Each structure stands twice: as C-alpha cells, then as structure tokens.
Amino acid sequence: MRRLYYLLSLCLLFPALVWAQIQIKVTSIPPTTPANSNVYIVGSFNNWAPGDPNYKLTAGSDGVLSVTINPAPGTVEYKFTRGNWDSVEGNSNGGYLPNRTYQYAGGEQTLSLTIASWEDIGGGNHSYASNVSIVSQDFYMPQLDRNRRIWLYLPPDYQTTGKRYPVLYMHDGQNIFDIATSFSGEWEVDESLNDLFNNGDPGIIVVAIDNGGAERINELTPWSNPQYGGGQASAYVDFIVETLKPYIDAHYRTRPERDYTGIMGSSLGGLTSMYAAIEHQDVFSKAGVFSPSFWFSSQAYTHVTQTGKQADMRIYMIAGQNESATMASDLNNMYNTLLGAGFRQDEIKKVIHPDGAHTEWYWAREFPAAYRWLFADAGPTNTTDTGVPVFTISPNPADSVLYLESTTTLSDPRLLVYTMDGRAVKPPTYLSGQSWDASILRSGVYIFRVYDGNKLIGSQQVVIGH
Image 1 (cartoon, one colour):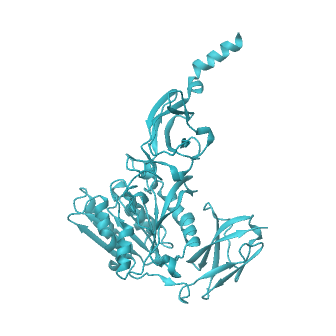
Image 2 (cartoon, one colour):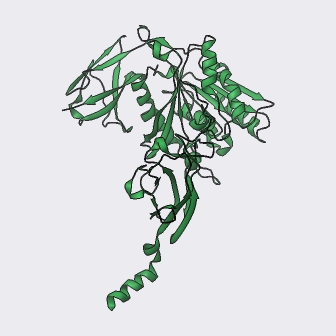
Image 3 (cartoon, helix red, strand yellow):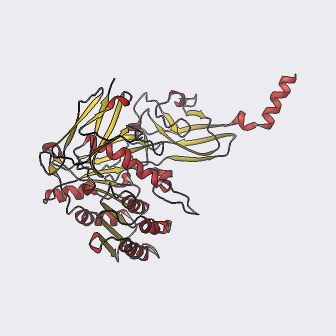
C-alpha cells in the first residue's frame, strides 16, 4: 500500500516524468513514395540519426503512420526521412525543407502532420548544372556539433585537365545553384560561371554550405543582438577554416593559398563574409559582401577597426539604395571604417544600385561582376607550374616518419595536423627539416596542412597506421 501511495505521489508531483512524450502522426505521405518504404523521424532528440530503428514510424489499423518521442521540454527540431539523408523530406516543390520545429512545454502531446515530398524523388524542377554535385548531405560540423549539406561546383574543364583552381566559399547553399532547393530564387552561380567560362574565363571552384534553417541567425552572426540573439559565426567560420577547407583542399585540385581563396554571401551571409575575411586574413584574401546586415551589431565596425589590416585584400560590397532605411549609409560607414583600418581604396569596391533589392534575383545579377573583380588576379594553374608550390607527404599510409616533398623550395616548412572532425592535434607540430615523426599520433586519418612560414601552401589527407 505504501508503495502504491509513493508511486501515486510521484505521478502527482512529477507528471512530466510519466507523460513527457509526443505522439507524431503522419496522415499523408507523397504518392511517389516507393512501395514498402520505411519512414523515420530524425531530430535533436536522437542526435540526427536518419535511420534510427527506434524512431521508425509504424502503421496503425487506420493506416496512419505514427511514432512516439520523448524529448526534453524546449525547442524540438526534426524532419522525416526514408532512412538516410539522401531521402529526406522536401517542400511542396520537391526542394529543400528547413528543419521542422515544435515548442514542447512537456506533458503528453499529439501532432498530426503530412509529408509533402521527398527530395530525391520530389518532382521539383531542379536547375543546377551537370558540373554541380553534392559533397555530402550531412557533412559533420564539429565546431557546432551539427551536420550540413555541402554543394560543389567544378569548372567545365576540371575532369579533362590537371589544373588547380581558386576556391570561393559561399553561404546559404540552398539558394546558390538550384531553384528547387531555394527559398525565394537562386543565385544562378553555376549558369553564370559556365557562361563566363565559355567566353574565356579560366574557371573557379565554388563550395556552398547550406544554412541551418532555424539555426541560420545563430550561425551567420558573429555577435548577439538583443532582439534576435545569435553569435555563433565564430564557430561556423572556424568550421570552414579548420574542417571544410582542409577537406576540399585534400580531395580536389585547389589553389589553397590565401591569394586564391574567397568567401561570399548576402544579408547575414554578407555580415559573416566580412567578419571571416577580417578575422582570418591568413586564409581569405577576397570577400563578396552582398546587402550585408551590418545593422545586426555595431561590432561589425569595431571588429574591423580593432583587427586592422594584416594583409592585402579585395572586398566587394554591394547593396540597393532602398533595401532599408540604413543599408546605403551602413555600406558607406563600413567603407570608411575599412579605410581607417589601413585598407587602400583600390582594395575596396563599393557599389550602391538604385534598383537593388534584398533578394536573390539582384544578387544573381550582380554575381558575375563581383566574381570578375575579386578574382581578376587569381586564376587556375597547371599542377606542373613551378611557380606554385605543389607538395606530397609520403609514405601514405604511414607508420612513423613522414617526408615532405615540394616542387619549390620552402624556406620555413611547418606542419599543422588536424583530425578529420577538425580538431587540431596538440601540441602544435612543426616540420624539422623535411621530415616529421608521426609516431605520436594514434592510428587514424588526419588532415596535414603545410605552411611556408605563415603562408598556407595546401592540405593533404594522410592515413596513420601503427
């Protein structure tokens, strides 16, 4: 009797412990869903594992699919898949659908939902060119403990030459290449670059990172705003610098030096592109800053002033005169701030268009001019060009001692080693002459970044096995 009374008391005192669950009911799935497909829910409550058998929906006697989840109170983010990220649900056009969110206050809740489409068979009118591909649907971002889709544009002659190309990193990847995944139109970067290539442009690699949906404001703002929050762009940019760029440099023929590396975005992405270029002047030498949200924090200006000019840069800033009450004046203020920080007038291009708007058609229209100006002095080169340091680290796989060979003489060769999830190996590791003792590393796969003094030469993936 006492035990029953005790259990009843717990239920009265802590009802959330008993009824802390949400029943998810899916009343309609796309008619294109393959027969016998399993449907899963994936989200913040199961570490975003897309095919977790504990979160498979089951059909009831009425044919309705359902599953019960037990999240903690707060914001619950989730999506539906057919077992992997390639088969994630899409929007009504078959394109990208941001994470679903639900503000869970605890207790027993029921949600009735429908699935509009699947991205892989959604029927959306995709518009990306044949030389655009997906690097990964769920590339891990260790600095933020999240996963993200990464897009890749390769020049038309990439497969038929041995050239190494400059690289441009872009935010809001959903809107860069494909109308079906875009929110309100695409930049048409692939079409523009292919047209420029056909008219003599030497080509470039573009890497586009999807925004995080509900996390977009957090990830694309270096500082917090009293009304909108934010402030995680430092970690997001570190992901690009420490994890994504080494991966791209290791797997594709890039020109990894700062002179051939740029970053570009619009709105909050413009704010973050300016921050990234100033904060990491050893990595980026070019920034495309479209319709930037400098209003988000006055620290956008103080960051430039306090950091100052550390290397030559090319910064292209554009906006529409009437995008907002302060857009033009914000752009002028940043232009003057850059000059005050030591940048020359010929390093900054500022364009304010009377008809400019805060939307993709405007950014698409202005992308070619921005690209040509930013990369006017930074084209591709053949791998055999002696003016470009091309190196190899061998043997690979390796056991103990590694050797560095380069097509040019490095005056101060240094080596920084990262794990595949972007963590730097500590203590910092430097080359002694042209060899390095790899026995201090555990067996595994690493990214080796080679510097000549403070200048990044490139990256290589190396397998260590003892």
